[in-house]
Structure formats: C-alpha cells, structure tokens
Image (cartoon, rainbow, N blue to C red; front, side, top):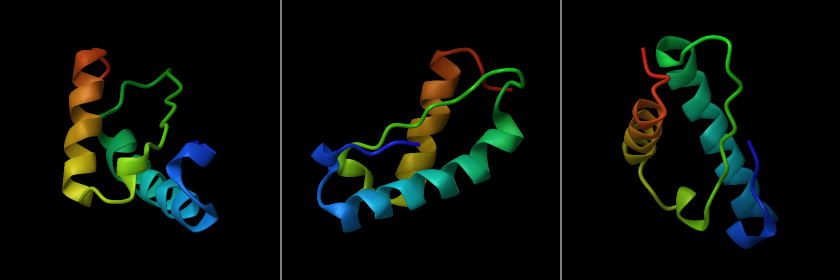
Amino acid sequence: MTASRRVGNAVRRNRARRRLRALAERVIPLHAEPGYDYVLIARSATVDRTFSALVEDLETAMKRLNVWR
C-alpha cells in the first residue's frame, strides 16, 4: 500500500493506508488469485469514500485484471 503526499497531510495519508490495509485483509485472501503481488495506491478520494465503495472498486479492478476467483 502506498499513499503519496498528493493524498493530503500525514493524518490523511495514514488513514488512507489503514483503510487500504483493512480492504486488502478483507478481500485479497478470499478472492485474489495466488501467485501475484498486489499494489494498492491511495488517491485523495480514498479517505472520503465509503468502505463498501472501496470494496466494490477493488473487486471491479481485480475482475478486469482476471485475477478474481
């Protein structure tokens, strides 16, 4: 997980990283294809979006990459 300074100040970056970490712990072990490395990059909207919207975004991205199982 990564969050650049464009996301915001340190508080917003840390919150974005925590949310991405929770998202990865919830979705990747259950639905990700093994044998791949996954990189999650925080954007400024990561902090403001609902968690369910983030889950949907990750699921959609994984399906588009054909790594959803």
